[in-house]
Image (cartoon, rainbow, N blue to C red; front, side, top):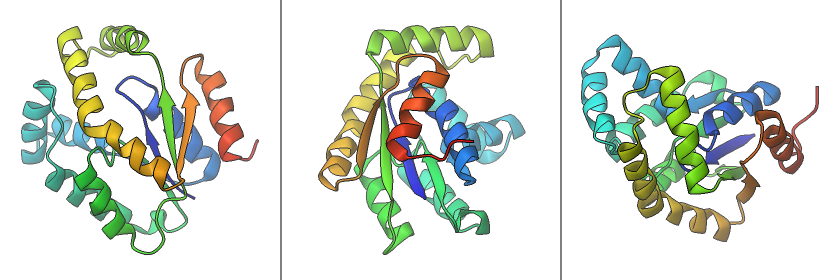
Length: 188
């Protein structure tokens, strides 16, 4: 299964993506994890990405697209994958279409959560994980960037008949049950 998970910052995409991917036996491809790995290793890409993320902006399309294309070309993606954090712009949607060719995505899962609940979640996460990029001003900026650049993708995927919206408010297990139900994820 070829999936994409979307939602605003703090909606629980990474947590749910890991659970879905494990259950389906496919890799999760998280651009955020790829970027954090490069930041932690102090690579040239990591230094540039850290500067961009600390300002609350998104990494440029060209960098992100190249990283995703390389990752999707790996053998473990042949039976399927779950994208988390890509695409985020209409430019990236077109790039993903080119990368995937004739067999595109099977579904696009969108987690929905009220904005003020997301801000509270992210501030709590910042405390727990000591993430300096998660302060209230940066969080609000990221949410504005999301609305401006990413929400139009929901319209695109809805028109393509791929969008599945799921209430992302509630416990991790409750949200996973909702996702499993709509995706028909096999139960263990």
